[in-house]
Image (cartoon, one colour):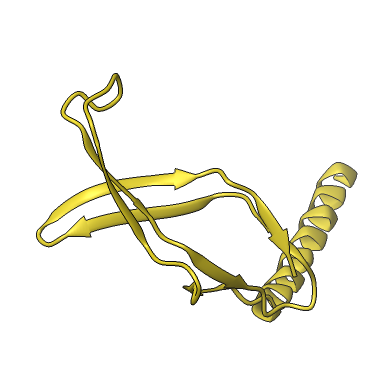
Length: 101
């Protein structure tokens, strides 16, 4: 009986903590991405190789990232999907790290 009461008390505390996290999550805003004004996009044709037996094309896009929050954050992974109607061309994640405020 006492163990059951302790488990209920711990569960209630965890539930209250999760409710508080929802309030904090509404205060945190996502970073904003925009095209970098001083850099042009780059497109290059790549020849056949070990990873690309038929070759391919490489695209480099430059972005300016702004953090609207009062605290700094670290951008660890950027997921992307590229398509050219009606085909999906690429999907993946970049593991570059940048941090800032």
